Every structure is written in C-alpha cells, then in structure tokens.
Length: 225
Picture 1 (cartoon, rainbow, N blue to C red):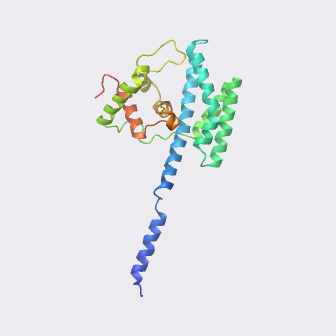
Picture 2 (cartoon, rainbow, N blue to C red):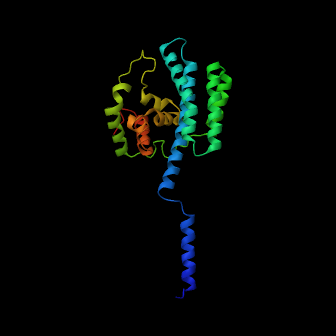
Picture 3 (cartoon, rainbow, N blue to C red):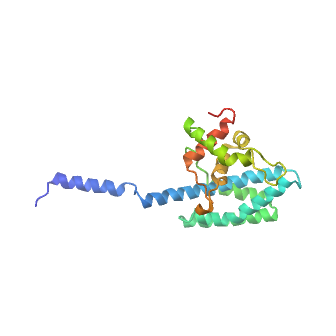
C-alpha cells in the first residue's frame, strides 16, 4: 500500500498539534486543583494580615481583641499544614512556604511585631492572590439575585443580627465590602465560607458564585436587584 506524501505530512502535523495541545481530563483537572490550592494559600495570608492590623488597632483587654488573638494563633498554627496541603505539587515552593509559616508563627508568639510583619509581607509577595474574574465586576443581575437569596437563607441569621459583645462577632459583610481592600475582602470570601464535613468544610462555591457574592455585598442591601 502506497501513501501520498501530502497525507503523510498532514498526519504528522496533526500528531504534533495533538502532542503540543493542553492535556484534557485528569491532567487538566489536576492543574486546576493545584491553582485553586495556591489561590487558597494566598488568601489565608491576606486574611492573617488583615486580622493582625485589626488586632493592633483593637482596644486593650476587650473581648474582641482576645477573640482576634485566638483566631490569629489558630490560623498560624494551621499555616504550615496549609502550605503542605496547598503547595504539595511544587516541592521547593512547599518547603519555602512551610519554613516561612513556621518563622511567622514563632515571631507572633514571641511578640516580635517587626519581624512578623516583614515575614508576612515576604510570603504575600511570594504567593500573591490572583483574583482573575473574582472581583465581582462581571457579575450579572441574575447572579447577584442568586447571591442575595443565598445570603438571606444561609448567612443573614448571623451576619445581620450580630452579637456585639461576642469575642468574634459576625461582621457586617456589606460594610466590609465597601471599606476593606478588595483583595482582602475577596480573600475572606474564599476562606470564610465553609461547606459540610462531607467535603472537609471546604468552600463549596466556585469562582463565579464567589464573584456574585462580592458584587452583591458591594452594591449594598438597598440597591439589590
């Protein structure tokens, strides 16, 4: 059987294109999961920075200050484990993040605030939070209506009717959305929403849904669609 030279070249070209194309299926899914884990680690760092700023501004010996200190200590205790979990596909990044998280925790325990701030900013620079389309700017009216229903059904009971004397009162998310840095507020939406124990309490929302919530909180209760 004889092959036409053009057909042979065409098949070779098609094979080269297929080999160079991004792999679908499991490989692509693994890459997406790795990106989400790196995003979540970056979000945790921004939340720690925001809580540390709030702690330094809080009045001495108030319940809220004690609550913030306990929350920060808990987050810092978990940070090396989160570095291993979120960055396990990259051994060098994981090692650097774990070492940095361990040094950050030690500086906080010892009250070395300058060292703590420098180490935290170093980690945030090394692992920046890329929001892509999660800033809420592209959310549709339908998506914002969905976000409002979700808030009313799942969130309002705590966030609308808050206990101001609690150590960690549920925040006014509408106020936070308008006064907090956009990246930090998005980070809190990524890390602060939890699912059921069945999914290890991970955030069950995708990036489009988180963006819809961010857009809803920014436009405010009264202006909702």
